[in-house]
Amino acid sequence: MHSLPLFFRLNGQPVIVLGEGDAAEAKRRLIERAGGLVTQDETAAASLAFVALDEPEAAVARLKARGVLVNVVDRPELCQFTVPSLLERGPVLVAVGTGGVSAGLAKALRLRLEGLLPQSLGALADALGAARTAMRQRWPDGGTRRRALDAALAAGGVLDPLGDHGAQAVSEWLDGADQSSTGAAEFTLLSDDPDDLSLRQARWLGSADVVCHEPGVPDAVLIRARADAVRQSLSPGEAAPALPGRIVVIRRG
Image (cartoon, rainbow, N blue to C red; front, side, top):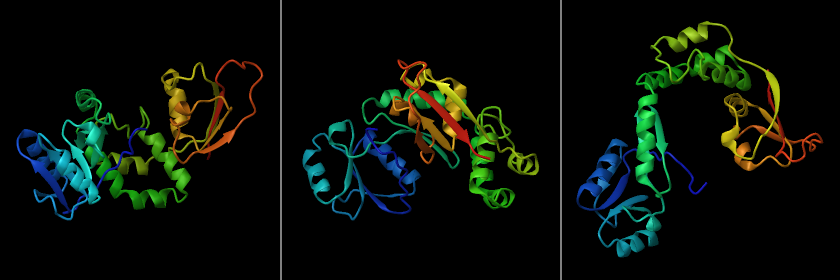
């Protein structure tokens, strides 16, 4: 990754914005939407700064010398952080970033996602947050609880995020049958390109508790698995040594 994506909670903290015009005004609106306090005082005790000046170098150098993280409009080489294109559905925030390479591409992707994600997604997120205690009571074991939620949120599941769910969807799910699952699957990669994974293979990787793989499996494929999934090595297969390697994914009951 070229950057570490983070969601930064401002909660009334000051954020420096230097400059005038449309670009600076857009940054001010964004900061205020996120709960920050905009200041034009370059010396303010702030952690973040946005600079929209024609000649930003001197101001940027002073801010960086004080340990302030800086974003400079249209000057990615001076930026210590970039601002993604944002899609908001209540508490759900989807951020699309290119590391400053192409803001236009990030915007185009965000607009495509706007048409895919229903307005009800925010209500679904709120309902899931309110149901945390009920989910712990229903499935005391964390692994079982996660697998039940994974199954419900999967494509075609009872809480499929791309579906249009009413406020009662989560409570109806909790009152229904157990959605947890267990099992294992094995497949051999056709190439080292993660885009060649089938939808089923990608879903297994994304929900597996354990990922066993041959040494030839590339990291670009393995990062499609959950970050907390256990990884184990397999002995190289003898049937097809030219292929990148086998993967066995396991979901525990």
